[in-house]
Length: 590
Image 1 (cartoon, rainbow, N blue to C red):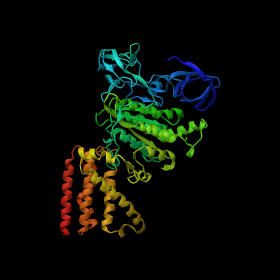
Image 2: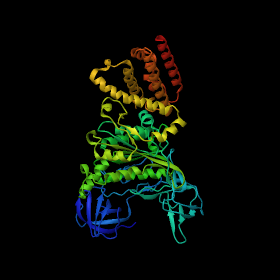
Image 3: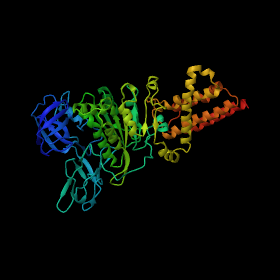
Image 4: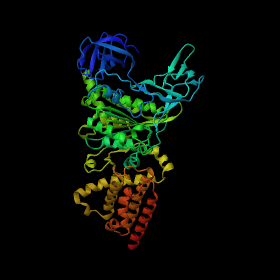
């Protein structure tokens, strides 16, 4: 669309620019500032003036420089070529920019988000004369070996297909179909279309959140599971393992697509993600994890306003793949940096600050973001989901600060990271005392039907033991463990066993790095059985020392390394050895 001058620069305040003489402009319109065509977005509009936030460095911009309107909102391009690409916060492809720039990204550089020259093999799924509506599948493109990209009718369009191309190779700019919207209007359809990032893509209805997102991390799947379409917050101070936990979930979870948003994180952390993800092997396909991943890299020294836009860019890409019937997991690392960007922009706009300087609309913005998660029935009748896993970086690890507290209001799963666990090299360092999941009751039917009817009972029992241990530890600090009777010391021992043999997971061990839910249920049941039989033995006169000296006790400690996911018969043998050992111990004290 041809650019038009809509005003002139009046004042420059960092990334926030006041524009005077505004004509023919609309809210959230995409604009270009100055002769270098810096990308910006119109965020405040008055009678003859406006405020624009610029997504690039504004050095050199001066009063009376022209401001051009693009005639559309800040949007992303949706089509083949997204998967495996690394974008910045406003969907500029960084690898393509690197080929055109020097060390730094040139200001005002314009590179299409999707490759305009590459041809994709399109297989039509409809024919001329068919009635189509928004969200329907026109055809498919095999984008990667793992991803069959479904070409959708843009959500707002409907009508009769006047024509559609035959199976063949096409670029994203070639017309693949002509849609007759009424008697006088026609619209060309392409392999790609655009969608505004701040607008939620429409669906038919929300579906119940009763299917778990399996992550392979035992502390998550067994104690604090998240549903497909759910929302999770991972708060933790520096060095507690937020990024490590998100990377583990991204690698092992059973989502079809991963959207990883590095929002204002340190450059070295984003570098680790960019170098490690292409080398990670997808356990389901044996191929690179990048073949089902989109990375958005927006490091802390990039323009602050682009950081504010990055999470909307990521969630819009996720919704697009959800509309194709895929389950998508969004990793936002971290929403605290995004909130800090809101605070800086709000301050430059001289808005009234709320608690700790954050804008008064911070809770609304957080709610809008997490509200875009969910398991949906799409416009074409399929089922897809967007699961949001957002890291929060509270200053000093203080969970009472505003971003953490407001986030807790709008999420249903909370994985609190504990610095003491991280310092003890206990990973994932998710606290079993502060964390919670409100999806348990919704998903218990799935667990009982698909995995084990015993799961919820065993989980409830072990959680009760962990809370009893906390009270006993307070007594131990006062009088020492030797003052406790064996019945109470056995609780401490079982909880210690559970933490080391179950909750702690070695990301570098080929067997322990990932646990199927079937293995998790069996491991949990072995520990609960040890607790139940051991408690009976102690009541009948056995000592804690004898319980710990049993050879099967060491086997239980090592079971996460010794029994692989694909050979669960080992648990039958372990449970049989446990029963025999307990029978022998009780026989001695009968």
